[in-house]
Amino acid sequence: MNFFKRVMNIFSLKNSLSALGIEAKLSEQMSAALSEWDRLYREKDGLSLASAIASETARLTTIEFKSEISGSGRAAFLEKQYKDFIANIRNITELACAKGGVVLKPYMADGSIKVSCIQAENFIPTEFNSSGDIVGAAFLDRHFSGGKVYTRIEQHGFDGDAYIIRNFAFVGDNASSLGRAVSLQDVPAWRDIEPYVAMAGIKKPLFVYFKMPMANCIDTNSPLGVSVFARVASLIGDAEAQYKRLLWEFESGERALYVDEAAMHRDSSGECVVPDRRLYRLLNSGDDTLFEDWTPTLRDESIINGLNEILRRIEFNSGLAYGTLSNVLNIDRTAEEIRVSKQRSYAHVCDIQDALRTALTALVDAMNTITDLYCLAEDGQYGISFEFDDSIVADRKTEFEEKLRLCQEGIIEPWEVRAWYFGEDEETAKKRSCMSAHAPQKENAGGKV
Image 1 (cartoon, helix red, strand yellow):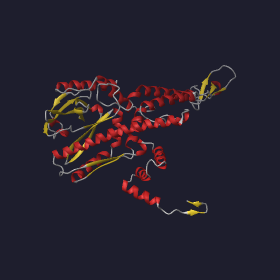
Image 2: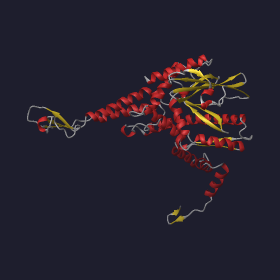
Image 3: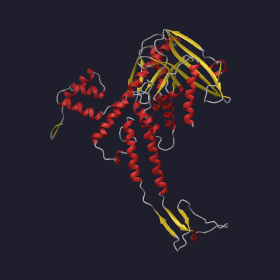
Image 4: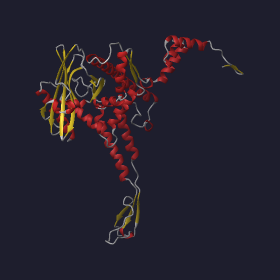
């Protein structure tokens, strides 16, 4: 029922947007998929595989992540705002992984720039360009007060050479519909928001869509992103069912002692007094058997093996390496199979890192535009740098061994190995490589060392 209500909320919103003259570019398939991904991600019973997949993918993507803006006074101002935002980048990446993408929307507040992370269920695309990028969208902001639900719809889009932002406010008795239209002035939190703003000279939207880089397997005509577990939703259900079988196997197979009622004490009402109802089971055998042990043989190994195989299929279809969710020790796999699965995971993570880099670069560009609009800092150039943990997106040990072999065969120079391994520039690497080559060698009784 909750799933049905969430789908109906999106349909209701689309109809309300249509009444406002806003065309929503969101198919019924994507609406239903967004609700299903949200349900799976929020599921906390059982294995919670959906949230585990999203969390681990985000962790691999952002581990040791560093990014900063530098170059001028303008860059210093942007860096201060940007630093506050990326402090929470792993959580934001996890939400994007779970729901196919999130919108990052900067805005001015009290002389500084804040960034809102708008989840997939709270925005609807209204316009795409020829490259499939979102250039128009409607965003939801909900406020609960006095038993009422206040909803603000903020629309962004281009009208000719002008960038238009429109705001609408509604109030209703529940979250299943928008309710009736009200003025922004009726809601204290929104009194400072203009209902209509037109800006000239804006070339790009003042929001950024951080999208998962996988192809859309739900609606192949939609440019929207899909969840990292979009291809394993049914397998997640299979894994949960198998896990319940395992729990039932242990519960139903608990050892017990069947005791004839004649061997038990009785209370004042004549009822048998059972010391531990989990251990003792009463029976009325009618013969001389007062006690009988029950210790069944558990089938846990076969059930666990079945669960492990399902988890491996989930890992394969969601871009994770074998052993992330499953137990690789329980399955006979070659080292080559494990290596290939890790390489597949590295490539998957690298694609998401590229998408994150693109989104953050566009975000800083939007922040810079807002800085210009409100004259928040002096003019100046800026540059943005990114650093990801190489050990996540590359098999560093294998790559080192390969470079060392190429060096020994004279294909590459020693300084090139140093530059790659230590992150040194060419001049420094050549200098230190030369110093190592001419360093005095020590001798011991066995010869040179």
